[in-house]
Image (cartoon, rainbow over all chains, first blue to last red; front, side, top):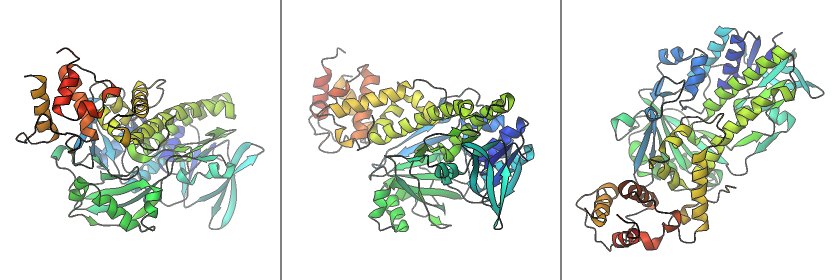
Length: 421
Length: 80
C-alpha cells in the first residue's frame, strides 16, 4: 500500500509524486492514458523554473532541447506589435531569463518518468472510477483495469485528474465561471513565419482579434513546428454552425500580422477543439484529500498560467501533506492552508485576466507605461503567490472605473460587458 | 522645440510611422482614424514621459484629443 494515491499523471500529478518521493512519502500515480499523449497548454511562465529547479528537472528540459521562451509579443488588429522580455524583470530564485515552450506529450512523459525515478510508483492505462469515502473521510480509490474493479486504500488521495475534475464531479463541488466560456481550436503547422523581427521569433505571439474575447496563440514547438490556436467566446462558434475549420480560418483572417505569418503555413495534424471554460471547486481540500492543478481551478489560458498553477499547487499541497504525515492530522482543517495559498494566487491570475478582457487597450497601455510596466511583467512571469496587495491590479481597476463613470472618455466604447465588481 | 512640434513629430514618426506624412494642426485625428484607442493611450504615456504631465483620466475626451491644436491648447494649463 502507498501512503498517497495521486489520480492523474499530468504535470500536477507528476510534480506531486516527485515532491512526495523526495520527502520520503510513498506514493502511487494512476494515469488513465498511456504516455506519450497529446495535450493543450504548450507555453509556460518563468515562475515555473523555480519548481523545476527544486525537483532537479531543469537538466532534463535542457537535455531534451525544449524551445527557450524569452518573452511574449502582442499584435493589435491594426498591425502594431509590442513585446516584453523576461530579462527585464529578474525574479528571485530564478537564474535564467527564459522559460520553455513544450510539446506536452513529451514534457508530461518526462515529468512522469522523473517522478518514477525519484521513487513514485506509476501505473498507466488505469482508470479511477471514484474516490472511496468512509463518511466524509477519503480512504482510497476504486480503479478499473481491463474491466476488473479493484479498491486501493491509502492515507491521502490527491486529485490531479485535470479538466476531468474527478472529485469535483463526484462531490458536486465544481462551480462554473459565470463569465469565461471560451472555445479554442488549434493544430500544428509547418512553415509559419514566426516573427517580423528575428529576436522575437521564438517568443509566444498573441494576436488580438476584433471579436468578443478573441485571440490567437502562436507557439514554437521545435525548429519547424508551430502550434496555432484560435480562442473566442463560445457563442462565436455558434455563428459557424460548429464548423471548427471555418472558425479557425476566420480567426486567422481577422488580424493582418497573423494572416501574413500563416501565408505559407501547412497544417500537419488534425484540428482539435477544446471548450476551455473557467471553473473552480468550491473547496480544494477535505478530510484526507486535496485537489491540485486543473482539478482544483482553471482560469482562461491567455497568460500561459496553467502549467505554473499545476506545479505550484503540487508544491504547496505536498508541503501540507508532508506536515500532515508529521502530525498525523489529515483533516480538512489541517490541509486548508494549502487551499488558501493556492486560491489567493490563482485569484490574482483571475483578476488580471478579467481586467485584461474588460478593456484591452489598457493592458497595452500599462505594459508600455514606465509606472506600471515592471509590475505587469511581474504578473506575466507568474509571481502571483503570497502577494497580499497587488497595486497594479488596483490601478487597472481604478482606471476602468473612471472610464465607466465618465460620459465622454475616448475608450468608453472599448469597454466589454465583463463585470469587474 | 515647442510642444506642438514635438507632438506633431511623435504622431508622424511613432503613430503614423511615416515622417513625411502630411498632417495639419487642425486635422481631425480621431475622425480620420489616425489615433485609435491604443494610440490615444500611447499619446497619454508620451505626454507624461516627455512633458511630465499626467493627463487625468477624465480629461481623455474628444475635445482634448481631436487635433494637435486642441491637445496643445489643453496642455497650456500645465506650465512648461
